[in-house]
Image (tube, rainbow, N blue to C red):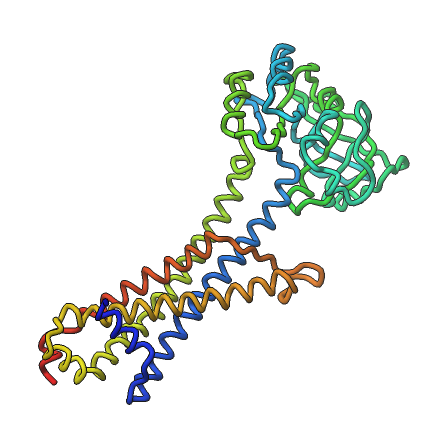
Amino acid sequence: MNFPLYIAKRYLRSKSSNNAINFITIIAIVGVILGSASLFIVLSGFSGLKDFTLQFSSIIDPNLKAETAKGKSFILTDDDVNKLNNLIDIAQYAKIVEERVIIASQDKSTIATIKGVDEHFEQVVNFDTVIEHGNWIEPKSQQIIVGWGIANSLSLGILDYTNPVNVYVPKPGKDQITSTTNAFNSINVINVGVFFINEKLNDTYVFAPIDLAQNLLNYEPNQISAIEFKLKDGVDEALAKEHIQAILGNKVIIKNRAQLNDALYKMLNTENLAVYLIFTLVLIIAFFNVIGSLIMMMLDKKRSLSTLFNVGVTVRDIRRIFFYQGSLMSVVGGFIGLLISLIIVFLQKTFSLVMITPSLAYPVNIKVENLFIVFITISVLGIIASKIASVRVTKSLIEGY
């Protein structure tokens, strides 16, 4: 039998004759419970916010995207097309032409990014789910579909033939500009739909058939800006990336979804780390109560400790008693806190107790890694606090009774 652990369990369950020590012990345990519960709830909240934020970008982000490595476009040869068609990793791919443009209607104008897509684009991303009004563009047409922000800025309707929409892009060249006609390529289009993804994308993108974008930019039929890929289920992303890179060579840079949104991922991960460190600091402060509780317990149990010492228990074993007691207090408190926080997060996820808007509940997500992070944090801090307190047991303290 582990004698120090047995005594530690007895001390943890028994009450002291001094009510002040009992009160301090209760405060210490409650602090650990609330600290662990708060940390898990906050981490679950940030996990929910992260998933909620990324789900919008993933709607229009492909599994992989090959972007031009130099300049604004590259040439996709017939040989490249044949090899991509024969690549077993790819379920579908779409050719893309992107460029900054000016879009104007009814004396209003704004800067946007036109994204010319081919007929396979809808099979690469699930864009139908974000179309609020109207329909998707038809291939080889003069149609566009705009974001909610652009539609609002330009007061664009759907299939409004009485108010034409013009798209302008500067002509390439170095000569002096003598007139607006010579400075811009332009094309008349009709808006057939409005999509809603998030504020940034709603204010940025205009989708159009790829041949319209190529004509506007004076591109060749095989000149594109990027290729977006949808991979087959179960395909290794890294391996597929290598196969595509081998076909297209160094004229492109291939990115996955995380790399396409690297700034967003970094921001979310940084915020998550900052919140974790802040709440860990709160936990560290809470564990000072554990240290104080153990020291008060040592002073209260001096007579018992002296008896144990006189019957042959070493100072080291007495230290281990309080080390185990503090560790058990931390682990038990952390476990109870996790259990309480799991119930709270589950209730929020099921019944939407806290709302951001009348129709949107605060997103939360229960992740196993967050459970491990909180439990390990509580355990490590508890062991450190118990170690700090247990070294206060000395031979002179025991014999001094």
